[in-house]
Length: 448
Ligand SMILES: *Cc1c(COP(=O)(O)O)cnc(C)c1O
Image (cartoon, rainbow, N blue to C red; front, side, top):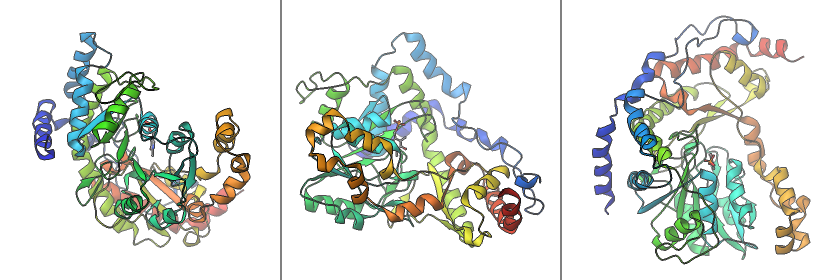
């Protein structure tokens, strides 16, 4: 199937469910008030008094018929609707095939296991990601190797990857964190040079692109998540995409008890099948994804420009060639020196008090208990020499100083904020300016 044709079919199918439902949230836009006055954290009026777009979105008229049909049919276990969802997802991403799984974590676990990655292999990943990226590597019995990030982009640095390659390196797991595309050109070049597998963690990066090619299609495989908070929410759900038919047959087999499928003979497996009603929810939510992605990108572009005018606020930079990001999150860095030394935690509290949802994001993944405890398991002890399983030594070898600092400076805005209108982006900027103006007072009154 040519991508072009697949895409046209997708658009034709879209019309059935209707795109009208996507813009409901226009009714509940935050109100712009003056950036003057007392900070909300000190008892003043918050800048935002009306709700941000609610997540997930649900429209009874347009969303319920397909889901009710699935429920009323009594066919709940994997059947035609799941297959149709996969067809649509593959077409939308521009991959030959897609396979759904119960969640993104298991999409990653499946893709890693079916890429012949196992005990003794080293797999390179960034330290700035959700724990599931690491879970997939540890689940396979492989050894994670952390490569530092570029703090400007929040993404894995190809130069840092190069430094981590050894004769035992088997794969790279780049993560398009926040929905920002990792630098796939150089990463694929490194992989080619060293004959490495590349599995993209695109669990936050639906429809993100580099030179109009979707992320998830650069590597050997790409993995997606449809968890409740994600930009295509099903509650739980995930998908693997790839052009490699043999690999995909193996994944299908693995996700269905290791039963033979296509070119894949029987193998160790699990049971990770999506249900029909989940696929129905996924198909109605898929209708929103394209227009919402456009809106998020427009607002993010504007917000980045505006933030560049505030001293001490450093918005993320997109890698060269990025034609679209997914913006599961909008990340920026906070420099407290320009805010009367107000610590980030207080800045976040102050911003939240003004009615802007935000958080401080990840802590370093290369320094968590799971790692040390995994090294204590029976399987790891059998697979690796004890010298390699010293958690102290591991931490020593996996230091990522740029990421340490990034984790202290980062601030995230969630994706639903980017679905509001342009004047709401101005409110975010006003709120930051209000905090900056009153930073000394906030610092004095909240640091007890
Ligand atoms: C959400 C997420 C996952 C895991 O997906 P689930 O569907 O929650 O299991 C993996 N990696 C990243 C970067 C994610 O954000």
